[in-house]
Image (tube, rainbow, N blue to C red):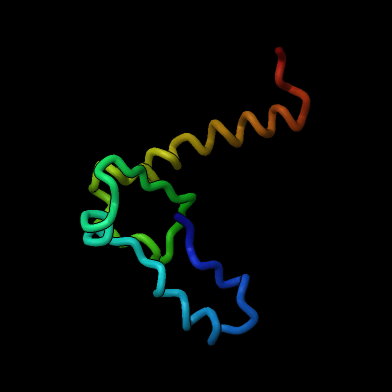
Length: 85
């Protein structure tokens, strides 16, 4: 999941028309999601994932963020030629 990106719209009015059209909440997941669905998001979120999803076992976005620093460190090391095989 990701946010509706304001920068992709020509005008604020166009963005405002669709920004609330794609919102994931607990009810949507419980009624339509598979039991073992994994919800990931790059964060920060705007309103595309309701906070009532945060405590669900399916919500992996906070765990996902925890890995970001290590991924960035590895990418920088590779880019600088510091990675030893």
